[in-house]
Amino acid sequence: MAETGESVVHGSKARPQDLPSIDKLLRLTAVQPLLEAHGHTLVATQARVLLDSLRVQALSDNLQQSDIQNDALSAALALSIEERLTPRLRRVLNLTGTVIHTNLGRSVLPQAAIRHLTAMMEGPNNLEYDLIDGGRGDRDSIVEGLLCDITGAEAATVVNNNAAAVLLSIAALAGGREVVVSRGELVEIGGAFRMPDVMASAGAIMVEVGTTNRTHLADYERAITARTAILMKVHTSNYAVEGFTSSVPESQLAVLARERGVALVTDLGSGSLIDMGQLGLPQEPTPQQMLADGCGVVTFSGDKLLGGPQAGLIVGERDLITKIRKFPMKRALRLSKLPLAALEATLTLYLQPELLTRDLPTLRWLTRTPEQAAETANVLLAPMTAALAPRYTVAVQAMLSQIGSGSLPVDRLPSAGLVISPVLARKRGTGTALENLATALRSLPLPIIGRVADDSLLLDCRCLDDVTDVLAQLTTLRERLA
Ligand SMILES: *Cc1c(COP(=O)(O)O)cnc(C)c1O
Image (tube, rainbow, N blue to C red; front, side, top):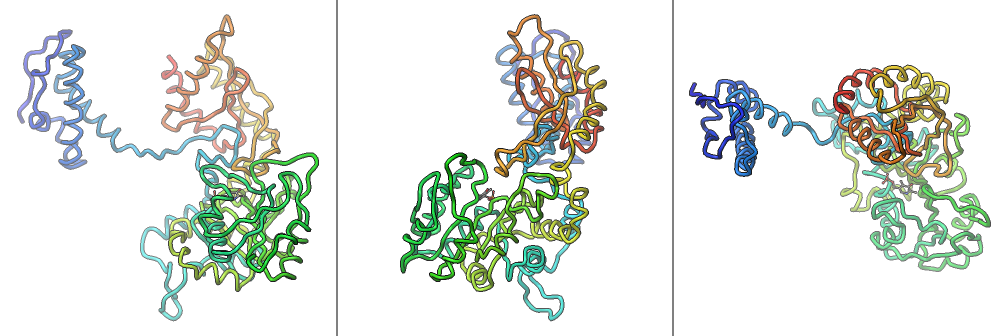
């Protein structure tokens, strides 16, 4: 093998013309294992990237001869390849205290769903194939029975997410016709999902009734015409209207809808499939209750309180669901086989509701007591104190968690965790010290995400199942902060 080893003058600057050619770099002995492991294309690309950046450094007189010795070059190339191959999507530890965190991927799948998903993706499967008669099957049928059993619906269909479920339901049932909705429920869920825009995208004409704080049955009654297709209810998930308020419950609207021959569609947003009150959590309306109250169609998310994959679930009366399923837009919004497998396994857990607070991460974390969270925090206290001393103090403290994802916006859950505060002579510099710590935590191999509040960094231990995920990284944390 040819080597580029000219005489080494340590400490002296390297000039652009001292850099090896790509070919020369690729012929180095230490580069051969990289070529074998990754193939010529990637190694050559990264070699070019590396040499380009070294050339820029050399031109600004910032490159040492020692930086361009064979060992240094091959090590830099190996690092650059490793970085290029590191996925953008990374696992993180969510110690923010927000259980269903939209920015952190919402619900975490139960093990049963991960196993089923992996098993189904390892080969072909019967996604749209009937194993009994050997004919074409329907992917909806994989979860429809489960959804009907759990919610009491006559029929069910699934799409990519709940925003899609709402859009599709309105388009299929009310395209070109009118949808009556209360002004108190014209919500923006986040991003570009605003009810009025969804109605327009679905080709429906929105008819607003009532006021922001009060809407009455008579408001809906007066708005119904021959052009009306739907009475729409939207669960105000991410905000609360308090004080002098009134809205019309589904049970009353259902009677009116039936009398006047229009469909009652409810977008529940989160839609817990079990009684949250029984778990000691804030009450949420369930799809089963909405159907029992007379709703024709109920839509909800798969990855909020349900605790499964991203999906939009649509349950309701058979003729309405059939119309929705047959609408052409359904094909564009359909659920892929990956989340479908995860959804099936997650829904199967609901046939064993006693297992949910153990096996479904979302419900396990939501029902974790402050005492349990404090226990976890106490295990971390001494090692974390040692890792951060003397620049930060660490204490175990009570704190409040949030459910998140627009679920139950006003409720907070008592929790516990670590409170980390900078040790400073004066208050000045607190922000920088906290930012340094938060950055170091985010830079760990398994990034730790906390939240800053009251001049401290809080690590809420509600969602931490395994303390070793933190403990194993404390030496690295100490190094990163040094
Ligand atoms: C979250 C939410 C949606 C959107 O659901 P995604 O699954 O995020 O698409 C729609 N409506 C309401 C009321 C929601 O809370």
